[in-house]
Image (cartoon, rainbow, N blue to C red):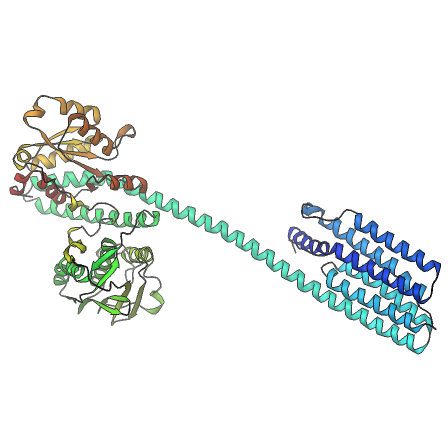
Length: 607
C-alpha cells in the first residue's frame, strides 16, 4: 500500500477510535467503579476503596489529557495511533489487577461477577478498537490473560472451566477483531482508490473539455482564416466566369466555381459543428406544420433524386409538432440528403405518424444499409460507411453528427435501425401539437429558401430584403459603397459587380468611406447600399462603422455585412442587430439576388 494511502487509511482508523474516546473512558471506569462498590458491599476492605480511588483518578487523568482532532497533520497520524495504543494498554494493565485482588476459591459469586465484567469490557473494546489492531491487542490481552491466570491459579474444576472458557473467548475476540479490521481497512483502501480515480477522471474530463474548447476555437479560427482567401478566389472566379461567358475557356471557369462552392459548403458544415459545440444556438420552439415542412423537403431534394433515378416519396399527414422549424428542417434535410447519397436503387420516403402524444418522423431508404457494429458510430464526426477513400461526392461525414447534436439540443430522440443490403430507417420523436393553429401559413417556415449549408444560428442569406420604403427608380441608378480592409477583396468585388453593370466605390476604412460619402457627386448619384466587411483593421467592425455612417450622413441606404466570422459572441451580436449577413465565401448568384432587392434594374442583367 503506498505510504500516503496507508496514512490516510490509518487516519480514518484513528478518527474512528477517538470518536468514541469519551464514551469509552466513562463506560470503562464506570464499570470499574461499579465493580469496586459491589466488592466493597460484599466484603468491606480498605484496600478496595484505595483501588477504586486510584482507578477513578487514572480515568480522570485520561479524560483530561490531549487527544487527536481533525486538524492534526496527516504525517502525525502514526504517532497518535501509537499513543492511543499505549494509553489503552495502560488502562488494561490497571484493570488487570482486579482478578488478583478479588478472585478467591471460596467466593464463586465474586469470581462470576468479575469474569462477566472483564469479558463484557473486552466485547465492547472489540467493537470500538478493531480499527487499530495494536490498541485492540493492548486492551484485551492484559485483562484477559490476567483473568485466565487468576482463574487457573485457584485449581478447582469450576475455576479451570472459567479459565478455559475465557481463553476461548479471548481467541475468538482476537480473530473476529482481526477480520473486522481487515474488512474495514480494505473498504477504506477501496474508497480512497475510488476517490483517486474520480479525481483522475475529473482531471481527464477537464482536459477533454479544454481540448474540445481548443478544437472549437481552432475550427472557428481556421474557418475564418480559410474563408478570407477563398472569398477572394470566389469573387475573382465569378468575375472571370462572367468575362469568359462567350469564350471557349468558360467551361474551365465553371469547373473552378463548382470546386470553390463545394469548398465553401464544406466550411459551412464545419462551422455548424463549431456553433453547436459552442452552445450559441438557442431553439425557438413553436408549432410546426409537418406538411409544409415536407413540401419544402420535396422541393429541395426532388431534382437530386431525379438525377440519381430514385423515387422520393413525402407523405402528408396533417400533423403539427412542437419544435424549432429551422433546426428541425436542418435535421430532416441532413437525413434525406444522407439517405439519397447511400441509395443506388429504389428510393427514399419521409413520413410522420402519431403515437399517443408523440409524433414519429421516419426517413427510410432502400440503400446499402448499416452493419450492426457500425450503427453506433454513424453519428460520429467524419465517420462514413463504406467510404474509406473519402470520396467527396459522399460529403464530409458530418451531417449525421449535426443531426445527433440537434436531437440533444431539441430533445428529439433519434433512433436508427438498418439491415445490410436492405436499407435504413432513421426515426425522430417529437411532441405532438393537439390542435393545429389557425394561421397555418404563418406558423410554417418555408425552409427551402435557405441554402442547405447555412448555419441555423445566423440570418440566412436569402432573408435579405429591402424595406417597403425603398424607391426602385433611385435604386436602379444608385451605387454600392464597399468597405473592406483587404485590397484584393475590394478589387475582386468591384470587378464582379462592375461586370454586371453595378457602379461600385470602394473604401479601406471608415475615413475613406466618409470621404466618399462627403463628395458632391454622392448627392447626384446616391449610394443605395453599404456593403461592409465585418472584421476591419485596427479592431473596427463593419456593424459599428456602417451604423455610424448611417447616423452621420442620414443615409436611407441599408447596411449588409459580409463576414467569415465564427466567434459565437460576435455572431450573437450580429444576429441581435438584425442586420443582414452574407457569409464568406459569398456565392456570386446569392450576392446578385440580394443586390436585386435594392436595385431592381439588375434583374434584367445576365447573372
